[in-house]
Amino acid sequence: MTHHKAKPREIIQDSITIILGVIIAGIALKCFLVPNHFFDGGITGISLLIHEIFGFSLGGAIMLLNLPLIIISWFTVGRTFAIRTIISILLLGICLFYLPDYKLTEDKLLIAVFGGAFLGIGTGLVMRGGAALDGTEVLVLYTLKRSSFTITEIILGINILIFTIAAFHSGINASLYSMLTYLAATRCIDYVVEGIQAFTGVTIISGKSEEIKYELVNRLGRGITIYKGERGFLPGQFEISADCDIIFTVITRLELRKLKNLVYEIDPKAFVFANTIKEAAGGVIKRRRHSH
Image (cartoon, rainbow, N blue to C red):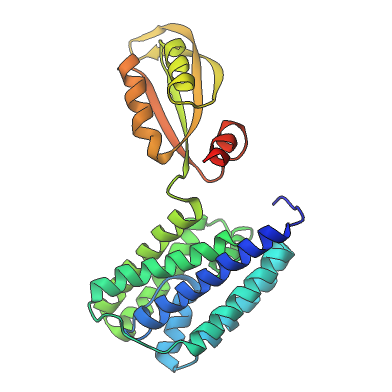
């Protein structure tokens, strides 16, 4: 992680983002999930189970279960993240204490989709503010160093356990709807953290690379990077190959279709593949973003 001294403006922006995220997550829990006995994945899901089965305070459960993970994050992620996470979880606890249980709807599908969406948006906003409402990721990073399991396998294992207990306690229907809640929350977290304008790295291999380069820079307005490579080596024609320029550029998700159309207009046989980029800064991207 890069360390720089946060400016007062950045601190205010992050604080507002975290507070807004906490309120939205609190509404999701108290107006959708808790009064309708729905669950979620991760530490929040375990807290909801404890609240449902033992009647323990939801805010208290979330704070207690996250506490050891906050301590771990102090040493593994950083002091600033740990402090912000403590504040966020305390704010969520206060929010849950004062917000009444109020059923906004009794339609199970609406509860699962919108309860999960609001929870995901709230959690995502807190993450954008540099903190966390659920320490599952910290637990995963800690476990990852001490086991041969992947991140996906660890998160999946935790959630299978939660939803299995939920199925035994509240029935298979409640468990399945809770899985839908979790999926909705996860997708919304991705959109909030990465943004709808999530960046995509695109690699283009074509015999008409000169024309494609010109169009990408002058028509699409994107910077490009060129790798020197060889194309060919096809089955049955292994001996045939030719030098070529491999083009790499970074665009937004919304521009991907436009780029593909532009490339295939020039060369219908071009090989194009894309990868999602979690974070991008600098270059043409930075200039274009600040110009809007």
